[in-house]
Image 1 (cartoon, helix red, strand yellow):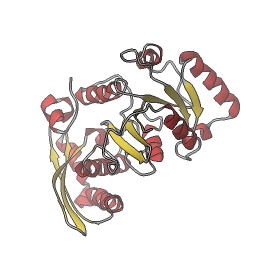
Image 2 (cartoon, one colour; image 1 turned 90 degrees about the vertical axis):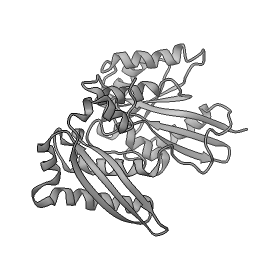
Image 3 (cartoon, rainbow, N blue to C red; image 1 turned 45 degrees about the vertical axis):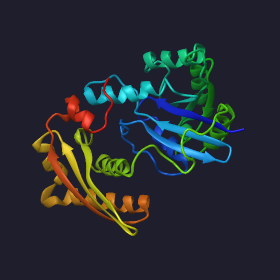
Length: 301
């Protein structure tokens, strides 16, 4: 008997979905920072065992879109409801069930009606429990039970990896009998170039403030790999000339810091020496331009 299925992680921004994904996978696969809206794509990570294959999906935080890029991000999140065998709905100790009622009603429908008659099990994960106390946590769990009475509720701390193994065990129990969807040596659906752009974006999120990180997109121009090293040429695109100046910084100091830190992380990720070149260019209002968004790999309906 072999089990396989899609386990999709959804929830509002900044509740710890990417940190959870990395902990479940046992390795870094998604950007995880203290800033909201860090995940822009749907990112798959695959766990392979002799008798099981778990295909996890990390998705962007659910929000009401203000521009075309956010419309694409919401489409990735809502798409994750359509092909889930198990849904992980992640919240935290601050968030209340009424924060995003429209999306929550879609989750309720998955459990009650399902897809093509197949009801989807939902594990509701209350994350960051190390930032709460027992009494408040019990009250919050009761509120969520009222909002999603068919969901199984698990208190966790993804950052401390508390409760993650319990969730993983339950996921394996819920997986349907099925042959593997992917080759058993495959661990993600994304190419190497994708992780280059994500790692550079992570450094931008960490080292710049306000709107700057959200106005940036990263593209890989060339990726040349040998047995011992990788030569990578990339471009950071911003929306305005003023943003370009901020990214580069006085005498190029800010961009050099991003490049250095990204190179160190890339070397750990690929286990090879990295030669990294980063250019900065203006792509005016790219977040509102459907043609440019499609070029950068975003889904537009």
